[in-house]
Length: 377
Image (cartoon, rainbow, N blue to C red; front, side, top):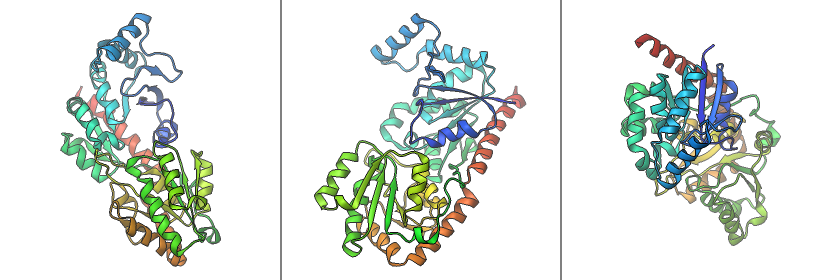
């Protein structure tokens, strides 16, 4: 069995379920490293750099000298990959891939870089890493994007077209499954995600305020956390709708599944903020569609592919608050049509976004990277 090393930014985070799916379901023997763009820790939390003086040297160069190209780190990673007899490295996020390229090259191990969102669009990040990206693109066996918009952006950044592969996220369609008709016909709208600029939670709240003028019995649940959470709560107070909007915080997957079954529609007003940050393909929208909910969202990134406009949901232009409210009102005004959209959404997910199919595709990409190495070595 091939041996895979997955290098990821964080030990764990609720908003990166797509990475956890790679860890849980890729059918290879796996080793996990984490620590941002600088993989310093093994899965058990121990330092990758083996000696005290090596760690001290690394920290001095990183924190005091502000260096990125730190030989002691690169050597430690190269040594680890060779010692563990790794066959292929999967770098989660482009920034991670950029910083591990040299070690993979020295260890003569193929590298697959999986971009996810901000790493392909956020202008400050791109400006900071553009030179590193160019070197990573040159060495990487394959570069994965999760939407056509992302693939195009990566090509514009210099990724060779022949190395680019589209592979969106996959959803556990047994965990996220439709409820019965009575539950679907509730008046509860649901948002799940981080409260950050690119998800523009305030726009969703303002649209919901307009919905309440027509349907005062409607409710909005906004689950998640993030820097704009308190601002969003304050907005509901300012608009006088705090009693109609619930903020349950960060929830585990099983509780999100239950919320989906209690809702009539999933709403998310994704936008491109001034810094250029964008979504990839939001997992929460895929989960909601798998659960048989119609979607009201924006014509943004991979959402344009995840939602078939007019068939599985409604899409509006970014920052179109009135348009968002209009589509939410249409959901409540025509529950039969909304339910039909939900059924079509489920079919769309089953045909294009199942976890088993997406994991199989990713596994094939990794196996091809290994095969290419032996073909040309």
